[in-house]
Length: 405
Image (cartoon, rainbow, N blue to C red):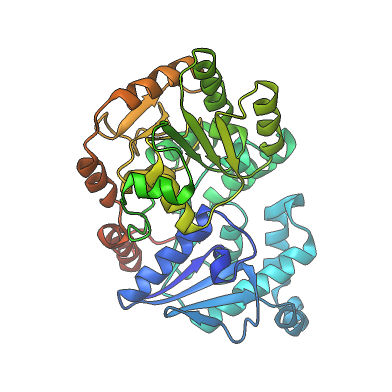
């Protein structure tokens, strides 16, 4: 099967931006290639010679090339109607130059790679180009990773994104939701989808996270062997619930309960988090690291007693699973983390934005004796090796024409 993935790639592969979607696109592509499929990525965050795609682990990666676009500009007149439809479709979200350059970028890759199936990641700006460039002649599946562009953008921008998604649904027939939570949010913010849909939780590379001795991990990180450690890993944006965790830490300080909170992450709320820590004199309790290498992150997961991310909006947060792969129970929020933490065998769920409940559950988690073997076994069920077949099944259904876009 010839499969074209449309989305970003992570920095270690050459991408210019970071994020969970980029990691997912790359992992999906390389695992499909390992299973014998011909796979390419139309990577819009990768600059390079599109006429000579990079090849890594058997995957072709097409980067954006201004030279190629300029080469095709004389053919604009031959595609005037399609370009007009695309510009009208996007409205003021993308200018005419952006519409023209992206259209020919997609058109070239489709012609050069000639895919059997197109898998687009995010329903906003990538889908229309894939649809119009393929002239609706190639089956397309689109993964809805989140509704963040609608939920967390300024009102005017949010409305424009919502309208674009609704207009895209008039052309789209096949969607993958990364969780039931995202599917429910989609119904709430966009409306009922009448096409074909699947829920496929994001798999994880289980070889990257594994249990090591807690004391050994703490010694390497120069952390106390006696103080309980609470770990948070995630971007510092308000939706992640970091301030709820800080409020809980403040409660522990007031009760003179000895513990350590380690926050690993960067983002728009970094300065506000630092200010909160200083204002509430939490310096001795809370430590912030803007980033950590993979080897360091593995140590921090294993050094922790609990992983806590009281987020009130997640697609399908793999950080919970990463912690569990190291045998560490996780604490998330009700309605958000239910699919990651399905029972109290693996952690706890608390109401969102409820610092008091979070503090109580952290105390319960620290006092409880956990079955680490059971936690690890559960987390390993999310491995790519066990879940890649679901994507192949979906592509197969598309090729049968049952769910043709």
